[in-house]
Amino acid sequence: MDGAVVDVAISGGGPFGLMLANELGRRGISVTLFDEKPSTAFNPQANATQARTMEHYRRLGFAEEVRALGLPDDFPTDVAYFTRYTGHELGRFRLPSAREARERVSSLSGSWSAAELPHRVSQKYVEQVLRKHAEAQPGVSINYGWRVSEFIDSQDGVSVTAQEVQTTSRRTVRAKYLVGGDGARSFVRRQLGIAYKGDAGAVRDFFGGRMFAIYLRCPQFYEVVPFAPAWMNVTFNNQRRAFMAAVDGRGEFAFHTQLREGEKEEDITDKQALEMFQAAVGHPVEAEVLSRGTWTAGYALVAESYSRGRVFLGGDAVHLFTPAGGLGYNTAVDDAVNLGWKLAAAIKGVGSPTILDSYEIERRPIAVRNTGFAKQFADSIGLYTPKPGLEDNTAQGVALRREAGAYLSGHGKAEFNIPGITFGARYDASPIILSEKRPPAEDRPDVYTPTSAPGGRAPHIWIDASTSLYDLFGFEWTLLRLGRTPPAVDAITSAAAQAGMDLSVVDIASAEVESLYEAPLVLIRPDQVVAWRGTRDADAQCTIETVLGRRMSGLEKIANEGAQDTVSTNSMHA
Image (cartoon, rainbow, N blue to C red; front, top):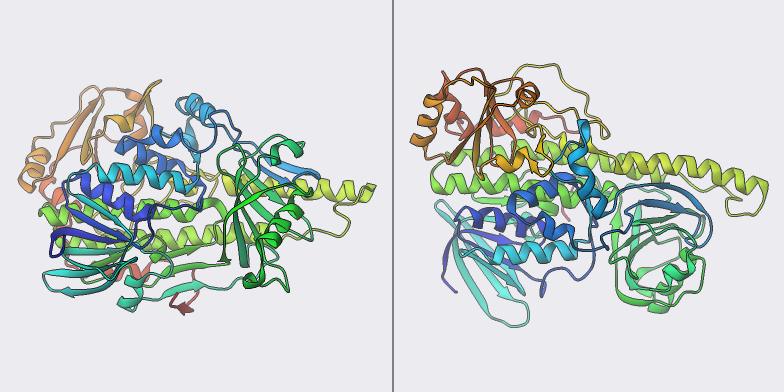
C-alpha cells in the first residue's frame, strides 16, 4: 500500500532479489519487492544450479522441490560437443542425472563432500519456487509489474517510489534499507553513480561479442539426433558455433549462437532464426520459436562499490559474467545469503549497523575471483577455433575430430568439475571473522580441500546415509561441541544470549567429525561459514562482539580496496 513502512525494499525479482526476500522473511524482516517484469522469468536464462546453491536451498527446505523440476529424473546432464548435432560427436563429459545425484551424494568425500550435488535446471523454474516460498512469508510483499522510479536516501531511511508498468499508478514505501538487485542495467546502481570495472569487450571466435538467443520447442530434435541426450549441447564448426541447454528434456531448448560478420540482430526474422538453429543441428528440423533476443558475451565486470549509505546492490547489478561455468546466478545467490542475515542482524539490533560494511569486504573479492574464472573458461572455449577440414569425411577429418574431441572433453571437465569454485570461497580478510594465520592455499577451480579454518564454508560430512551435518545446524548461529569430552561453553552461550544472538549448541561425539574440524569448539555463521574455532571459550565476549560487527569502526571497508583485484581499471556504466 502507498505510504507503507517496511524494513527492506528490494528492486529486482530475479534469483538475487527473491532469495534475499526468502532470507529476510524467514527472519521476520518485512520486505516489499518490486520488479518491472509481469512475472518471474519466461526465458530459461541460467541453467546450472551449483552444489553450494543447492545447499542453501536445502537449508531453506526446498532443495528437493527444485531438484524435481526441469529435466526428467533420469535425463543425463552430460556436456557434449559436436561438429553439428546430427554430425559427429567429438567429446562428452558425463554428469549424473537428478536420480543419480540423490543416490550418490551421501557416498562422496573429499572435494565433493556436500549436502547436495549440482542440479541442471533452468532459472525460469527456480524463480517460481523462490517466489512461492517468499510469498509464503507473512511480512513479504512481491510486486511484479512495478518499476522503481525514484529513491531518496536520508539518514534514517530510504523513501522508494515505484510506478506500475501498465498504468500511471505510483506507490511510495518507506524502508530502513533499499537493495538493488535490478540486473545489468541497474537503475539503482546508476542512480548511485557506481561504475563497473573490468573487461567489457573481449573478442573471441565464440563467447566474445553479440550472442543471439532463441528459446524454442523442437521435439523432432530427439528423433533426428543419433547420439545420447545431453543437458548441454555445444557445436564446433566454422559456420555456426552454438551452445544449447535442454530445458525440459522433451523438446524445449535454450539455443545461443554468436552473430557472425554481416549478421545484424535487428534484421533477423523468425525464419532466419530458425535457419540458424537448423544449421547447428545439421538437419532441416521443424521448430517453434518461443522467444528470441540478444546479449553480449565477453564481460568480466565487477562494480567498484556494493553500497552507498542505506542502499545496497547485489547480483548482476554488481557483477557481469560471460556465462561459462554458470557462475553468475550462483554468485548472486551467495550474495543474497550473505547480505540477508547481516541486514536482519542490523535491523534487529543483534549486530552493529557496521556489520553491513562486511558485505562488500567479503563478497566483492569473490566476484572478482569468479568473473576471473569464468573469463578463463570463456577463453578456453572461445579462442579455440575449428581447423579447416574438421567436418570432412576423410582421414584428415577423422584426425582433426579426434584432436578437437580430446581438447573439448578436457575443457568440459575443467569448466564443469569445479568444486574449488563452488565450495572454496573464503573471507579471511573479513573483520567479522576471527581469522588464523596460515599459509595461503592455492585457489584452483577443480580442487577443494575442506578446512575448518575460520573464513570458509564449514567442512561437510554425512552423519548417516540420510542426515547431513548441515541438517543439524540451527537456522541462525550454531556452536559445535565436538568429541567425547568437549569443553564447557557457559561463557560463550551467556555472551550470545546477552547480545540477542540466536545460538544453537550441537554436541557431536564422533571422532571423525572432531578430526575434520581440528578443534572441539566451532562457531558457525547463519550462512554456514566458520566464524571462529578454539579449544575453550575464555574470550567469549570478544568473540561474540567481533562476529556481530560490534568491534568494527566502520573504517574496515577500506580493506576491500587492498583486496587482490584482477579486473582491469577500465570502468563503464551499463
